[in-house]
Length: 175
Image (cartoon, rainbow, N blue to C red; front, side, top):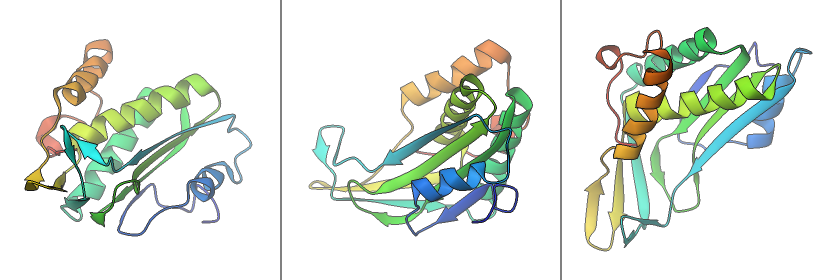
């Protein structure tokens, strides 16, 4: 990656990502960046009281990228950010592996923190991903958690629906 302006905003990939390289790319060539906030999600070794041997993530190609692009557009409309990057892995992952990166650059830390949290909350509830955990009892699809829906509701209560993030044009995910 040479510059945040030349890099894609959204990548869905099976390969791992390099957090340092991704954060550096957000800052390259933009003297207005004063803060970068990032979130990295990883595969837990336990879930709902059971050991997790692996997790498989699936997505709807084309639709997933479009939905995440709309979320980034909504973050730009809501917060004063310079740029954002979302990487989400798919395929078979092991405990401890990275699943998702959300990174946001802005002039000041407050906007970066808020936009990063906003994007993650919408990813967890509105991006078309599905995950299946392998446990000693067998495979199980993972449903959305009530806490994820509550986090999303907070943004709507504070500011109303974000542009382009209504459930009707985004899919429902199990993350």
